Image (cartoon, rainbow, N blue to C red; front, side, top):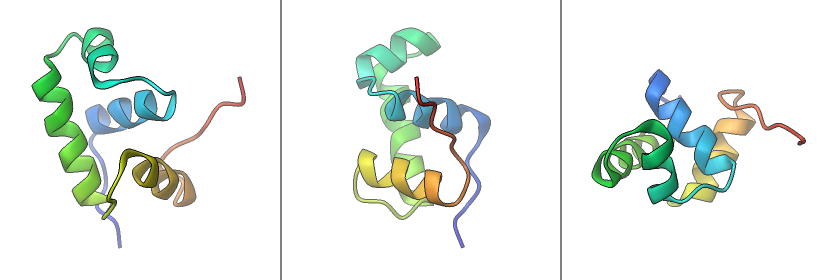
Length: 70
């Protein structure tokens, strides 16, 4: 069973899924890059993923993340 992501972690993961880099995510969320890295580390741990791509895929597979076609 995967741990539930926080609202902020879901925001970060959504931006990762949209192809944003850490610096861009930090700018959008008005936080530091270190904060983004912290959230990504938590996301990878909670989803038992080894990469950003794997995290996005797992979250999508279990319905935590919706991907837009646009």
